[in-house]
Image (cartoon, rainbow, N blue to C red; front, side):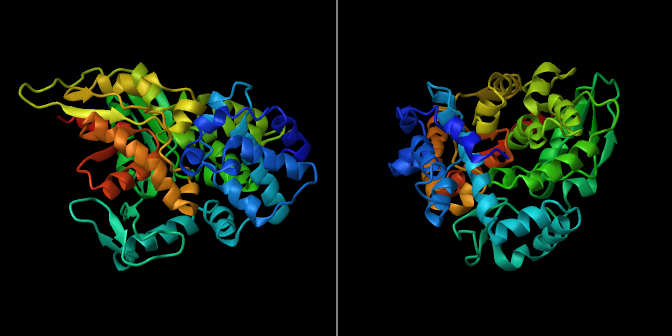
Length: 424
């Protein structure tokens, strides 16, 4: 964790020019100066210079940031505003500690191979008691309000069996051209195991053998983004050890948020003097997004479009972690455009944040929906039947938004689209 002086050294590069005001999704909806990047940085500077303290108001303001990186991407002075805000959250946690709910989730659930599956297994069994089916949709709505969950929220059904309960170890391709490890991620594991299955199917079809470690954990991003750096370091060690299998060329995370955490943040969880750091760097170097692999390794026997079948109109939402953090833009589009029976339609402001932002969506649900509304409008304008994305968090948000708007459109993960196209 950086010291306050180190955070201030970065913060002082901000000249308060206001470029971020036209970019920040939160500020655009609220028009509140403390909620834009320069406003948050000013507050951090005030506290660092002794003019203020880590109080509840400061904590609330820091929580109202998506960490989407739009401010950093557009800053003419190159100020890493999103990282400064995340570092300030770490300083806040170091001073005040985590809230009890976050402490319970991060330190006892995410870091446990028994408690998390046990809890979600129980949730899958009891979801009919607390939730009701949404007609014609594969999801649920709350029967009555629960803590931290708005009753309007669309919630996908918990899977009876997680992906890792059903599949682990090696899945070998016949004519092997590549070997990848599959980092499943929590949402795919417990909510959308079909994404994991689709990823394995499309890779093996292309001659890519897949190794799925049974003992893999959460990537740690929920804790890391909230200012907890101890839990992510513990999770990083376990995940890196889980993927020590020899012969793995790449490690693929279907979720862009997981991929960014594994590739960009894992190495920085370890000091340069830490003997584990070289292994963390080597691990990070292997991380890739599924779209990059699918774009580079073509299907050896691609399906052909059936004559007379109407093409599906498909658009794509760029996850912030994929577009801004990892710099991946063209590959998902190349993959979608190559699919038979698919007419790709580019969305207006496809890289605009959807407003999910992990715990931001829970703590600031109404604001999250306002940000999401602009994304839903852009999807509607395309006339697309399906919107695809490469992030499980974005997928949850898009499904919620489409449901709230009453639109008869679907949201799918990119690998699901590829898998389904091969079955046409």
